[in-house]
Structures are given as structure tokens and as C-alpha cells.
Length: 143
View 1 (tube, rainbow, N blue to C red):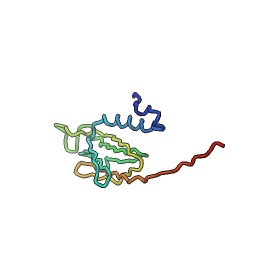
View 2: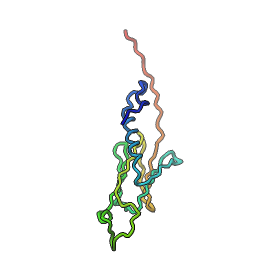
View 3: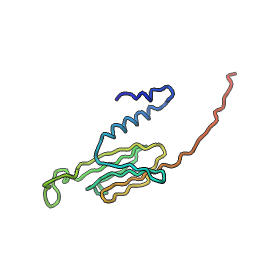
View 4: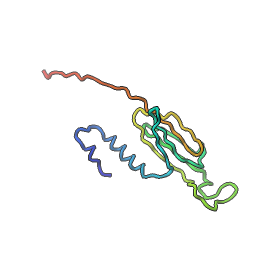
């Protein structure tokens, strides 16, 4: 991937990690399954909702690894093979594949919980108010 000119500025020092995050986010944005929404909440937090119709809670996994939120869905073997209990599909329009969707969270963001409701997986993320830090740097003389 080509380097972003913005991060080549001599005034932005130590932002290599940020560039990597942006490149990862751009790659993740090209994935289309499962569909999802991200909504801002009145309390300053965020709710991520993924359409996971057909997945049970034991087939879903939500993991927070450092600042990366990972949502994975794994389907049973019989669903993958095209049959189901009691017969075979005559038409199959509901996706039956597993997935891995990742979201990069900013420092300080906290995952509060996940709820599966009517085929939608809701993940609530809080954004605590950052504390303001000001520090005076002493100036020494060279003598």
C-alpha cells in the first residue's frame, strides 16, 4: 500500500502506528459480510449492530484484543454442507458462512457489553471523557 502524504509531514512525529491503523481500517471497509451499523449514542458512546440472522449466541464470539474489537461467527458443519435437520434447501438466500469482522477502538474506549436480539448483535462501546493534561516543561540553561 502506498504511504499517505499526510503522515509524511515533519510536524507529525511518531504517527506510524496511526498510519497502520488507517490502512487496516481501509482494508476492513472492503469486507461486506455481515452488514453492520455504527451509531453515535446520546451518552457519547457508540453502538455497533451486526446483522447475524441464523447465528445462535454459542456460534458468536466477541473479543477485545488490545484496541481491536473482533466479532466472529462460526456456523455448524451441517449448515455449511447445504442440508439442515429434516431436509435439504430448495433455495438458499440466507448467508450461511462464518465471518470475522474487526473494529479498531481509540485509546480509552471500553466495550460495555453485547446483546443478541432478533438476529441483530448489538455491541455497546463507551467513550469516557478524556482527562485534560497540561504540563509545564522546565527550561534549563546550558551552563
